[in-house]
Image 1 (spheres, helix red, strand yellow):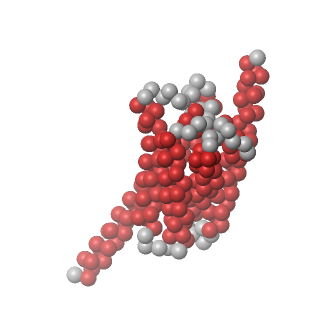
Image 2: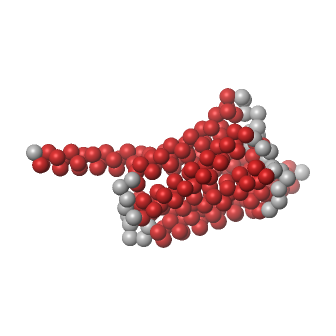
Length: 208
């Protein structure tokens, strides 16, 4: 029946969504702890960065390993089950897709470590903070673009948009977060760098 089908849909999504939520919550708590004594913006950024790093290393890192050693479809375990569930929305994650795996290798290695470096730069108030922040955000946005642009150009043959959960939660929400937050952080860096520039200019004028 329709009710049974909906219940099965919800039941299958519980464990993957719970795992994702747990990682995000752990990242937020760690980031807020690292940001004690700092302003609300930096604390929020640190919460995001720790969550971002955990997702890259734990979820996507395992995906890369599973894909290089075989396929998600042939794998077992909690994280494999998460990717199997997500593949109901985008089947490219179930079997070896060269574009997806290539982007994910870059995401895990580059974005993951950039998130750690940026966390360090914020906590230690390093001068290279916004350089790293801009670089990380551009990499995140590039990864999202390269994940979905090939699909859009070919008519979305691998995406399942017929179900509200797969479309709005799996595809739009979980991927949209990695577009929205990097976009906001790029704007934050723009504002902060502009402020630093004006402060430096005003200081030079006073000297003259």
